Image (cartoon, rainbow, N blue to C red; front, side):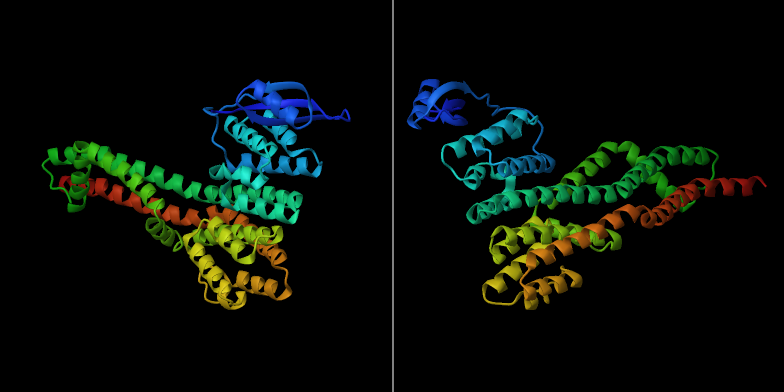
Length: 400
C-alpha cells in the first residue's frame, strides 16, 4: 500500500511541543504512529507532495543553498525532521521541495541522513552522500556541511568561468560560419551568374566557390541535415568515454583553453580531496571521489592510478611523479602535505591557487583570442572578396 507524508504537532508528557513528519497509509494510521511514540497528538496534516511536479531542474546552486540552510539548521540544534520540513516549505523549486520532504520523512522514520539521501542519488551524487556518511560517523556534520556548501558554490563559479571563457570565441565562430554560408550560398552565385552572362571566363577560384554555392542552394536540406547530425554526433561522442577523451585531447592542445580546463579540474580535485579527508573519508576513497568529481577523463585515470598504488602500499609522493595530468606545483604541494600530515590544508592552498589562476585567464582570454579571430575573419573576407573582385578586374582589363 502506498504511503502519504503527514506533518504532526504533538505534546510530550512534560508538555513540550514536538513537530515532525512521518509516512502512513491514512490519517488514522498516522495518529496511531504518533501515539506509539508516547506523544499526545495535537494536529496532523497531510504534506502536499509533488511527485509529478514540473518545476525547474535541480541545479548545483539549489543544492548549495539547501546545504547552507541545512548547516544552519544543524548548528542551531533544531530537530532534523522539523528543520528539513521548514526548509521544504520555503523551497521554491518544486522538485527539490519533494526531495527534502522525502528525506525529512525517512529521517523521522529512523534512517540516517546519508541513507535517506541515497534514495535521491541522482540529485546529490556519490561525493555528497559519502561525505555526509563520513561526517555522521565522526560527528563532524556541521563544519562538513559548511565546506560542502562552499565547495558547491565554487564549483558553480568555476563552471560559469569556463563557459564565459568559451562563450565569446564560440559566438564569433558561429556568426562567422553563418556569414560565410550566406556569402557563398547567396552572394557569390549571383555575382558569378552576372559575370557569366557577359560571356566572361570566370577564374577557377570563383568557379569553385560558385559550384559550392549552387550545391548549397540545390541541396540545402542535405547541408542542414549534416550540420544537425554533426551536433548530435558530437553530443553522442561527449557522452561516451572514448569520444570524450578524443574531444578533451583536442581542447587540451589549445594553449589558453588547456590552462583554463586544467586549472578548473585541479581546483575541484583538490577541494574534494581535502574535504573528503577532513570529513573522515579515507585517503584512497577521497582520491577516487575527487578524481570522479574533477570532470576530466585524464585526471580520472591519474586518480585511479594513485588510489590503486596507494592501496598497495605506495607513497603519494612516488605515485604523483608518474601522473601526467597533475601539474608539478600541485604534485609538490600534495607531497608536502603528505610529509606534514596535513593534506586538507595543502589541498585548500592548491585549490585557491588554481581558482585565482583560472579567474585571471578567463578575464583576459579576450585579449589573447581576439587577434586570432581577427586573422581568421580577415582570411575569410579575403577569400570571398577575391572570388568576387577577380572577375571584375578581368572585366575591366577587357574593357580597357
